[in-house]
Length: 121
Image 1 (tube, rainbow, N blue to C red):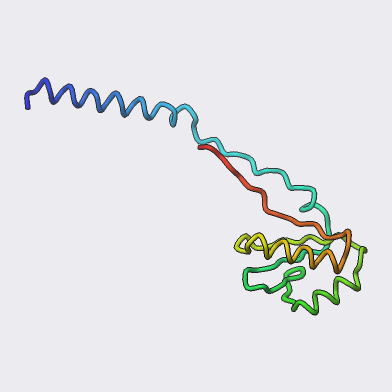
Image 2: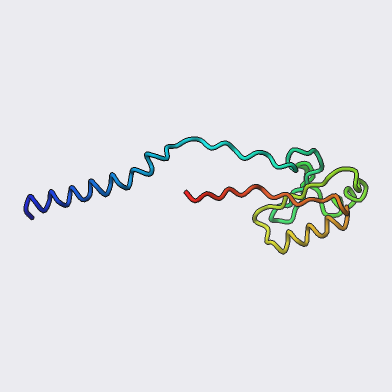
């Protein structure tokens, strides 16, 4: 290789590398504020979580399905109930569980899903 050819290759690499870095340098790394809490997360109420194994948690304590059913039937519509399923549960299981919870406490069960942050960066 001649010195002219080697210099041309290095110049092309230098220009293309600097052009590729311009968007990263211009955008900077400014921290993004966290999204505001949804209305359901601000409200106090009964939080029911279902994990992928099918276990139920009420306010962080493990309960069986029968205990959960008794608890919901006694509370009725007294307070709002937030159902937070695990993201590992299939959609059909979530729909079935939500339908079952709403049959126990009609009108007061709300499906809570974590906010989805989709960025194109």
